[in-house]
Image: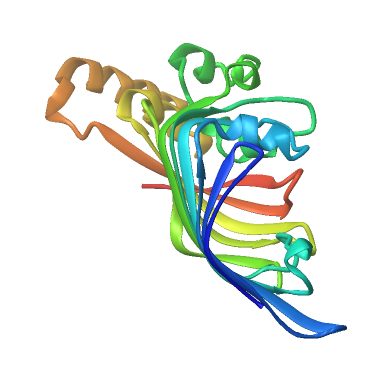
Length: 239
């Protein structure tokens, strides 16, 4: 059974493309190739019973994959194929039961130099993390997703790249997170992380005095590993 020319509205999403259902009862497979798109992702998440952890002006997801069973049995833990996702202009927000995205991305959103220098992160989860664009390309095999291209988040005050593996079946993530921040925000923090607060203060003052004659951005790499809902994020190295 093949479905051509799909153009369906589903709970805030528009599904376009083609799909099919193959095989015999007890040994069938389904496939889909096309694009899923919409406006505010938070509304779509709520419509499907998930926490509205991400907002967007618009989003789209290009899909080419298959899964065992009927089309109704589609699920992230059963999917094999490729996903290419893009989100524009939104925010990762903290809601009950949906903090994992902020734990991975938001911990590194250094908006206040003074507060971060005191290692005070109390304001972080209340604000969320704004972005201009998020894009990721993933290859999946039976619910295990590997980044073919890093998941990139471009924001007004920081850029992030997540590269690694997400095992939806075992609920595990094993990835590297590269964070690029404005040099005045980042260098004091990086110095504190490696145990040199005096160096951090000196770099901050030098940047204020010299301005654009020094590099305006610096990067820090982190390891992200463990259960997806409670990943352990550890400092790796600065750049």
